[in-house]
Image 1 (cartoon, helix red, strand yellow):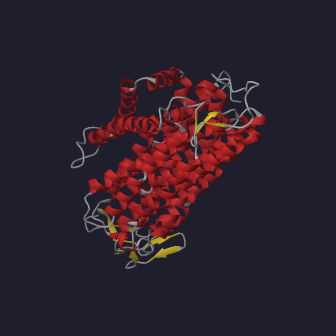
Image 2 (spheres, helix red, strand yellow):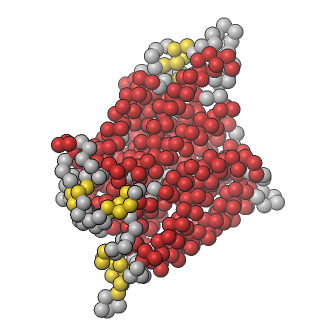
Image 3 (cartoon, one colour):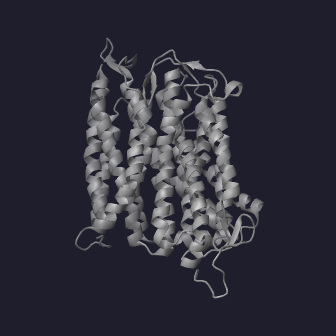
Length: 552
């Protein structure tokens, strides 16, 4: 699209209605300084907290499951790991249709509706947590809908990209993504704090007494302390209400990007339709994957995951019509390019690891270090005796995601200087070593009556993994910008972001299954092997003498 202004155009944005802007030329300096910059900045700063809350609602199960265990909810650790896995899978799956929302429905319409939809799982989760007898399937349904928060990332990034001139898109997208990623840390700090007080009076319900020691960022909270776990859901509903109001009255649809959204109700209908297709595919896949009584247990994860991805793409293409069909057909052309697949795998190393470890780390700390691991009279290892010296997951789990999110812009800056593929290669080497070392420490801790002695090394190595994966987030996005032209770069970014987000499903499932089997180290050893293979892939495609694309 030619954004250069005809001589008859004015220097100020043409506003067709309160929400719709008909003329948008950010590359025109006069237009930009004449009001365009103010509008773009306003949309950015409303977008950021909405995206932050999306991440928080999506990933809140990593903290909620820890407190459910501390309060004595009648679920096994492996069952609680399924909650984080379900939310992770749906968040990744919903990113696929969300990539198309802005061009179909407009930015203001999309951000308002998708953020408002998060209020449903937030309130439902709060209600479900008020009663320990709530069945597991209810929590699984809440986690299922929480995935909407993960899907919103693709739409949010696509929206902000359209507002800014090319020379400022890097900063704008960095702020939106980087501060949005801080939703993980914000959630891990705010939820433990919110659970210590009665915030919502009679509506919020009564307290429960901790059966085991818990904690927050300032230290341990002793067993027997009253706790309002339901606030973990209600707090996000309270925050989201003013944010969606701000989105409705403060954001805009750019008609240069979405010329035919068809009005507000039609725009909402498209979003609900595409999200509905993805929810149906994801729900069916989970039903085939999850064990009885929730599902049929017919598929293992490594079969269910690709089937869900392929089915989601197929259903969307078949069920799309009109403008949606043309958009999908054009963007599906990226799958003919081998670099789409190589960069997808490499992005799993970085963002997949970041988001997966963010989901799995809190419960892993609780299960591995919260119990004394001692053999019974027959020499069979037992993992049920509470460890009086256990570190609190709620005190430490937020540090890793904070480091990973904060370092992401640095990874992009370094990649600008030395090359994205070189940075990816270095961090892959670090992640191979750190992952293998974490596995060894986990093995030692899970076989010890005093596992807390291994916790400082465990935490330090995991922080190294978060640091490396955060730097790699920036380096892989930089490499995509080098390899692909502007037409394909956008769809590739959306696709890699969606597949990388499946790490939030894989990591909790793999780590939870290995803890259940008594061999948590095998999960980390497996990740180390994967990182090593990706190291070779990155070298073959982008660093060897006759690489397909030399970078640098």
